[in-house]
Amino acid sequence: MAGSATFNIADLFESLAGAFPERLALVSGAHRLTYAALDERADRLADVLRGRGVGAGSHVGVHLWNGHEYVEAMLAALKLRAVPINLNYRYVAAELRYLCDNADLVAVVTQRSLLPVMAEAARGLPAARTMLVVDDGAEADALGVEPVDYEVALSGGRPRRGYEARSGDDRYIIYTGGTTGMPKGVVWRHEDLFFAGLQGGRPGGDPVSSPAEVIEWASDPDNRMNLLPAAPLIHGAAQLGGWISLFTGGTLVIQPGKSFDARRTCELIGQERVTTITLVGDAMARPLCDTLGAPGAAYDTSTLVAIASAGAILSPAVRDRLQELLPETLVLNNFGSSETGHQGSAFPGSETGADGRPSFAMDPNSLVLDDELRPLAPGDGRMGKLARAGHVPLGYYKDEAKTAERFVTIDGKRFVLPGDLATIEADGRITVYGRGSNCINTGGEKVFPEEVEEALKAHADVFDALVVGIPDETWMERVVAVVQPRAGRAPTLGELQAHCRQHIAGYKVPRQLALVDEVARQPSGKPDYAWAKQIVLTTSDAGARA
Image (cartoon, rainbow, N blue to C red; front, side, top):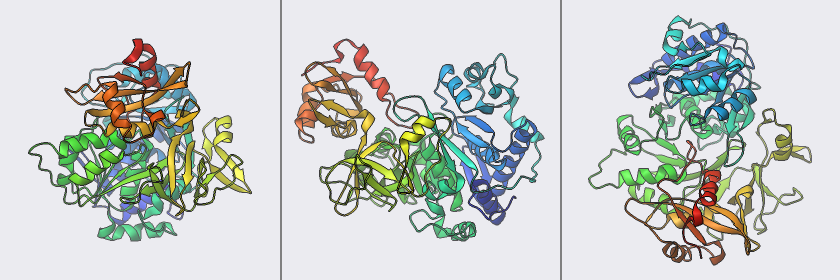
């Protein structure tokens, strides 16, 4: 081990593996790895990568479904002071080629099923030189690359140390697609990510003051968090949840594969004594509700302490249903982004602002700035730009213009502005309205899609919904709902309008409706507004208008 005097993720994990070698670290299907076993497999993979030229500052693409290999690949790269880069497994070759080039990948770990598209994307680029392939039973070949079987490579790797000294300055990059535009790589220092994204080693408490305290905290059985991330590990929030779990000395429980399975998730709670589930908004919470509330359903949820949604808002109707089904479990709306880490939580009973929007208790480094980038006082009432100071990222990888736009220095203090509009309540809670880039301007009034979506999803016939604005000669933009009905239901525009008027102002009510078989979302569960707008613009009249 290179030492644990700094807040470096690889150093911290190695310290835990040394302190609790036989403790169960990871469960993924039939694979059960202790801290020592996970550490050894990551060492073997690191040796393989090092032998192929991967070293400090190198970028390694991780193009995998959920599984133990994802964690091993991240950890192996970090041991070498290299940087794991999350690659969306739903991307087509053109999108992946952009990432191979933009992220400067020199190696990739991928699935056998995904090999053809990955090989096509990487052809002629440095990423094609080293391509390790996890066997998933598929018969998929690729021209132009020489893939190496993942397990065969590990069997030849040596579980040695001899790493160069690491530090809290080492880099960790999370590529985020947001809801529009090409993915951007958010560049973090390990130490900043530890305190901003990993809750400082003490979830729900004051951060540790030294790396040694991480071991002390993990030594107490009451502090262990057995966490199941429902989202894919290509999503930053799922990765951070995984590290949080491991740094409490708990067990990371992974549902292997490429798709979220609500029934299997419910089964795993009892089987693996899961204490915490992280998910992404209604897209995962609603199927969980349907599974838990199905006739005859009987799942052991006695160990489940908390369910936390991050990356997308959990609408009140879905949250209330989840709380009804799990009365002894704390259901939280957490707020944060790839650019800010964890900023705060909305607690039951005090989670809404004056107009019913989600309101969060955030850390002291979070504030709302006016147009001149001056802090708004609590209770000011004006809408401003959400900002965070303290431990923030260095910027976006190879994007100076976007970095200058989102990261600003005010009176010698550095802030990140993730793009959300917000107000600050009299008690200091921050009410979030959503990304300004998605705001709809209809007749001079601002409409935030998330608010309309929450109203729609409170209707009994609606399973999922996205809301977009399209050009309108009279109103500048027209509010349009793209709705996935529940099975066997077909709500009309008039029915949904009447329902929405009970929850939101008339100018926010959708004037047009498109019914779809399934609302498209990113693998993380985040909304795909570009898809929704395309559906509306390319479908003749896209349903009734009003």
